[in-house]
Image (cartoon, rainbow, N blue to C red; front, side, top):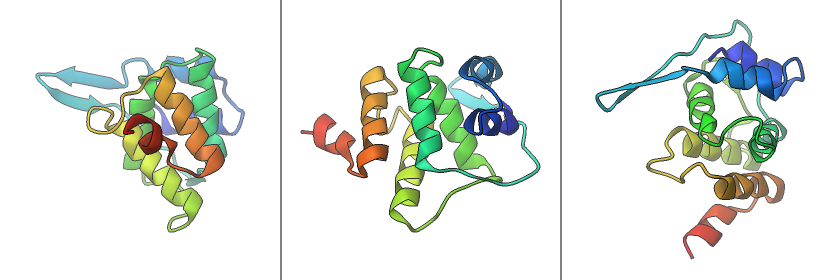
Length: 135
């Protein structure tokens, strides 16, 4: 996965098909060890909830798979170039979500249902995942 490819998706320079192609073979799993293939970009990029809503919409339109959010989430978490407004309500939702996506086995499974709830969390600012999935 190329960070620049994800950035291009966010800013409209690439569509979901190009993003999907870039995600192919971005995760390698052998003997229970997961390795991510990520190519860093040169310049920083500010992520907003609008960008992550775009990813949810791409999943809900069947343009990328829900499971692809794991590689995307890890890429964002591990990146030195993807940034967001830390210590703000929006930044807290972004941080929580990309961490949720990067570790679905310990957080929430990546399914159409959870992607809808992640999207709703971005729109409303409420943690609907905990309310609906844990009740």
